[in-house]
Image (cartoon, rainbow, N blue to C red; front, side, top):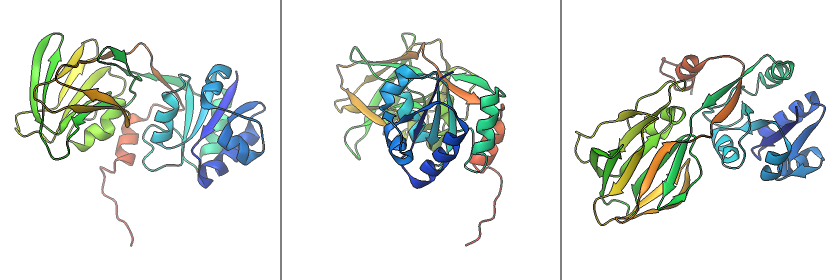
Length: 272
């Protein structure tokens, strides 16, 4: 089993990377972390062709960046902010990695979204596809079509189509529901709808979704936080279940505990 290591370029991440490196006999390093450890390094894409599994150290943004380039099972250690997708913290990183190396773990697969804009396939989305107005402060008119049937029409800032993984991210901030990642479904969340009749939807992942522009204003299409292109009145955006999954190396099935702890639904007292 060949391992690779990628981490966010920060002091906390490099410190954890050094500790993890000491545990592993033969791990290949991405160039930035390799430079810190005084070893030979490779690009992210090169690692994708050379390794079977990855250790990714950083936050959710680091994980999403890696997934755009590599589709391999990854063990994730949080040195970022929320870290909802990560498995281990800085404090338990070494002990958790020991368990993984002993095989006390499993691989969790999560759905991704296949996105085709104007006939061209974009990067698969692990979190969400966002369609938002290209003109700040101007209303965007959208139509959602599911399996050929008009399902919703929206005047507002835009629309988020999330995976269950992304349901705890941007979609949640605009009023979307949290969906268990063991369920394959699209979470459709309107962004600042002008009419309050526009509601979030949960749609089975075996459906095909289309989004069309109904007015004259263009929309910007973003996948996992990266701007991909423009959707115009004559354009087409089609979303469906990708055959590629996101693979996470897990120590336990702890989604609901993660929701409870990470999103702070319970009351906490903060000292100033």
